[in-house]
Amino acid sequence: MPATNVRTDRDQLVQEHMARFPDHVHQVGPEGDLLCVHVHKAGLHEVLRHLRDELGFTFLTTLCGMHFPGEEKELGIVYHLHNMRAGHRIRVKSRTTLADAVFPTVTDLWATANWMERETWDFFGLKFTGHPNLKRILNMEDFPAFPLRKDYPLEDPTRRDKDDTFFGR
Image (cartoon, rainbow, N blue to C red; front, top):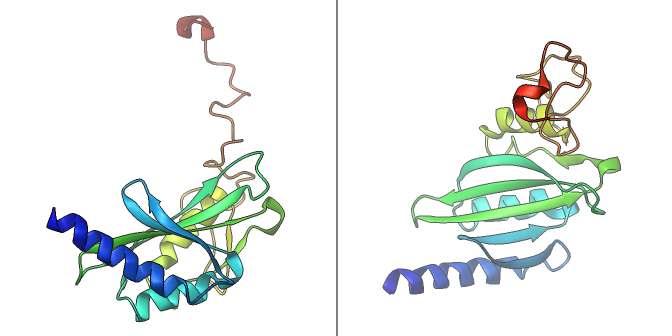
């Protein structure tokens, strides 16, 4: 039971700090197993810097893209941050339209974001302004699509060497 109280206290501290950004943070609350902070894209870098410098979230666990086809803000990004001293983790999310798939880089905050942002560009098509070397790392440089978007076909429609009768089709 005390662990729950500690977690609640930590979550409350983060919520109080996020109240300092009323123009940038539009939602803070538990989402699954972690506290989640939803941030407008314009204030994302400022909020992430505050979380790192003021609340001790010095470890970027992961950074990846999200795709919600058919929604107004179709693309998004999620950061998982860890305060290793306090043993606390949070999730930060931000969304954007397909036409404006650009976010500020956080390589100046966490050097490890370099490869994570490149992977997110490679698979979701999210660009990062200010990134030192934004290019594909796993797909061919001239690859015409972003394979982790949900509109990407699961199978190659041009294949002729496959007999679908073996798969019940």
